[in-house]
Length: 89
Image (cartoon, rainbow, N blue to C red; front, side, top):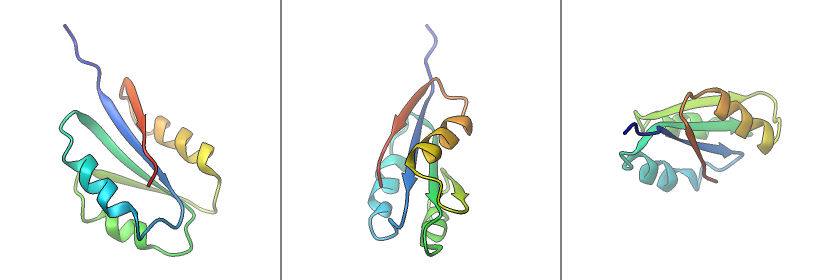
């Protein structure tokens, strides 16, 4: 029996104050092959700095802001996982 791989995609815009607990929980979830945080053109660089605290998290940034749908689609394109889990910051 083969197991499907799972990716967590976290689109975020100006969520620096709220994203750390989300990334912490996702990082502790062994089933996840990929954890992808997409900063959708936030007004500061706090998301990038926070992502560096989590070795399993891959960070992408949209410049300028492109919208949640675009960010979600970009995250899907950045993984080859068979199952996608979307999680708001």
